[in-house]
Length: 348
Ligand code: DAH
Image 1 (tube, rainbow, N blue to C red):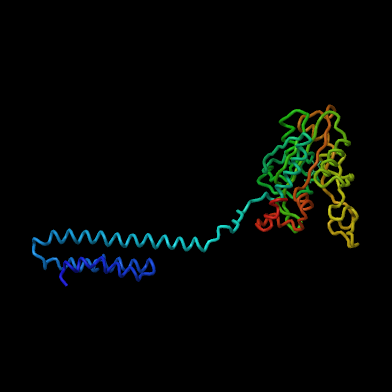
Image 2 (cartoon, rainbow, N blue to C red; image 1 turned 90 degrees about the vertical axis):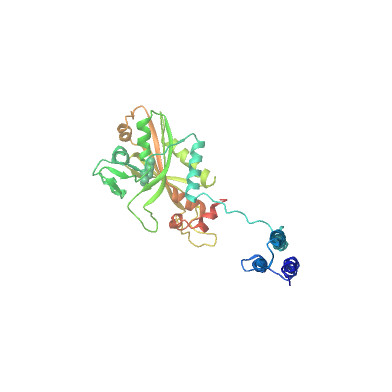
C-alpha cells in the first residue's frame, strides 16, 4: 500500500480498534499502538524518504491533521468511558440510605459530676475559684492548722516536689489562698485535682475534689446543715436523707462527717429481693463529705478576726459523686480513656 493511502486508512483502523476495547487500559494500549514511538503513525512517517522532496511538506501537513484527529478520537473515548464508569457507580449507590451519624465527643464523667456540683453551688451564690496544683506547705498544711510534725499530717501521704513545696493533697489550699486575697464575706467553691502517695483498687494517686467555704458574720452550724442537705438533694434527688456525725479535721471545729442515704438500696441496707446491699455494706448510709465550722486558728493564719466572723467549710471527692451518680463500679475506668466507656456519658 502506498504511503498516502496508508496514512488515510489510520482513522478507520483506529475506529475499528476502538470497537473492541473494554477498559481504560485497553484504550491506553491503542494509544500506544497508534501514536507511540514505534506505533502505526511513526512507522508511516519513517517512510518519508520514499517521497520526493516536493511531496514531503504536503504529506507532513496531512500527517499532522491525522495525528490530531486520532488524538481527538482517543480523548473523546476516554471521557466517554470515564463518565460511564461514574454512571455505573452511581447506579449501584442508593441515595436513600440514611447517613452515618458522626461520632460525637462527650464530657468525661468526672467533668460532668464536677460541673453539676459546681452549678448547684453557683445557684446558691457561690463563686468558682481555681488555683495551683503545686503549692506550698503553708497553703496545704500550716495555715490549715497542721503545723510541722502535727500528727494530722499523716492522714495524707504527701508527694513533695522539694522542701516545703508539695503537690496539693486537698483543695482546702483554696480556702487559704482566697481568704489571703479577700476580705469577708467569702462564698467560694474550688474544684480541682489533688495528689496523694497511694494507689490501689479504691485509690488513685491523682483524684478530684471540690472545696467549699462560706465566711460571713453569724454563720452557724445550721447554715452548714441546710446548705449541704440542699446540695445533696439537688444532686441525688429530693428523697435523699442526710445525717451529720461528729468527726475531726484540723481546720474545722467542730467537724462533721456527712452521710446520705444509700443511692443503691434507698437507705434500706438490702435490695427488694432481700439480698444485702454491697454499696453501703448493708448500713443504708454512704459517707459523702467532710465538713465543719472553720477553726479560729485558720482565720488567724489569714488575718481574719474570729470574734467578728465565722464560717463553714466542706470538701468532697468528685470520683465518689460520679460513681454513685452514674453507677460506676470500678474507679480505674475513669482513667483508662476507653472510648466505649466514655461514649456512654454522651447524653447522661
Ligand atoms: N480536706 C479534707 C480531705 O481532703 C476534706 C475536708 C474536710 C475539707 C472537712 C473541708 C472540711 O473543708 O471542712 O480529706
